[in-house]
Image (cartoon, rainbow, N blue to C red):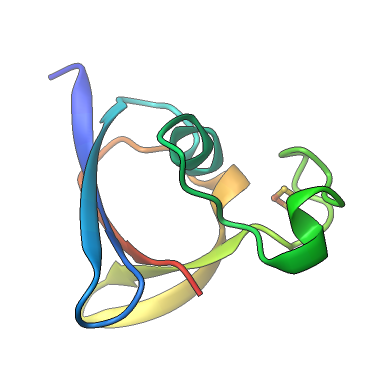
Length: 85
Ligand code: FES
């Protein structure tokens, strides 16, 4: 399969699904689909995916728990469920 599905939650009522090229970084997939992992001034002031600033954090659902992860350091090899903060 060349694509995986990323389900994005903002809160209990708002959800979206995007199809992502397998192996793409979550950060780039979100930005290409018109979503942002950044908040406020960090939309402009960030390390552009180098893994240095920590401003691209999202909550990733794994094993029935939410884990805070830098989206630029996640490669999408399997379907994901995330919460944008
Ligand atoms: S964009 Fe800076 S840590 Fe991810």
